[in-house]
Image (tube, rainbow, N blue to C red; front, side, top):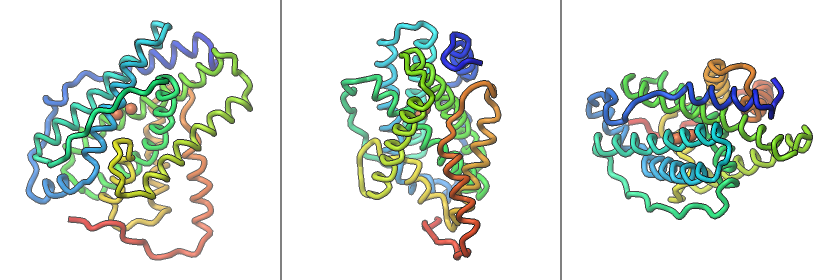
Amino acid sequence: MKIGSEAHKELFCYSFLDNHRQYEPEKLPWPELDEIALQRLRAIPFWATALATEQKAGAMINAYTKTINDPLVREAISLQGKEESRHARLIEFLIKHYGIEIVPPTPEPLPQNIEPAFIKFGFNECVDSFLAFGIFKLARLSHFFPEPLFAIFDTILDEEASHIVFFINWFAYLQVSQGEESKILGAGKTLCYYGKAIKHLAAITGNPNSQKPEKSFTFTGANTFIDTLTPQAFLTACLEENTRRMSYFDQRLLQPKLLSTVSKVALNILNFLPSRPPQSRTVKL
Ligand SMILES: [Fe+2]
Ligand SMILES: [Fe+2]
């Protein structure tokens, strides 16, 4: 499969379109929660952020769709916009259904340069999703919530996995179609975008009081779900879950690789260091 070819474009677009699931958030089998689960859900600090992020993503991608000339790429990116908007509706429904109190997010104006905004969002999603896969696995294993609630969020993570695989292939296709076929230049550009995404995440996590809508709910979520955890266990969960979720995609497609490569290196280093007792990061209800 030649990356950037018409065959490549058809593969990543049709794979994405075929992965789409039909559902309406309001009709999902939302479980009844007992008092403990309700308290846990209401204590999670990231619902307003998650809602704002998904609403902003949906609006931005829907606007970007209108600027795309290629009908197949437009159809695929339009579907991603619909899925992000559906994520927003799902979170909105959850907030109302379980009586979670939030300050409603204020809609933000659309970015002026929409394609760079879409690219930045795509790399942020690659970073966030890798970490979210691990956090979700650990939370699910600890039975933090009843399984039916995890099943609903599993669908969202499946969709996010689909978004990042689509994105990384679309980005490579875009580079080739714009004449940037040099592997070194292409890798440099990708690394630069990843660097910005990680810097963005680091800036956010360094400021836990930030109320900005783009604040990553992945990290604020980690502090909620994870009780006592070693960095090794966390990275192992992220890597295992990333490998499992990526294994469902056509292996001819590109996959986001930077986070898994860096995590493997970090894990090897950590395994050589003398072990320290796990640090408590959260108060579990
Ligand atoms: Fe989303
Ligand atoms: Fe997404």
